[in-house]
Image (tube, rainbow, N blue to C red; front, side, top):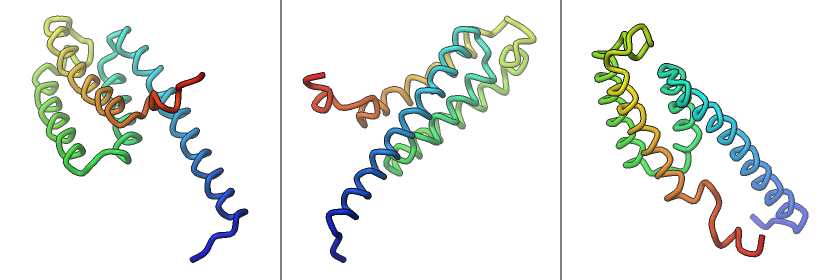
Length: 127
């Protein structure tokens, strides 16, 4: 199917708009993640990480999605054992809970970096 110059321009504009929407959505989620993490609001942090994963998973391979799911299932099982610390009813195991969620956070951030979701250096040259 042949595209006219106008259709190509509209398609490029739509792709640009979608990328901009992705940046806005992920930026807002990342801001909330930082806040939840610094406040040690473990349930919120965990839920926000899942939201971020949903957004970035569109750019991941099936193998990477499966890898995350394994990490998340492992984290979920461990967090269940530290339920009262996860829910902030006790500080007894809060360091362990923090470490479990931190591992997921780092994994997602590394994948976002690997996939240039923070912007590619080539595109930023000259700014």
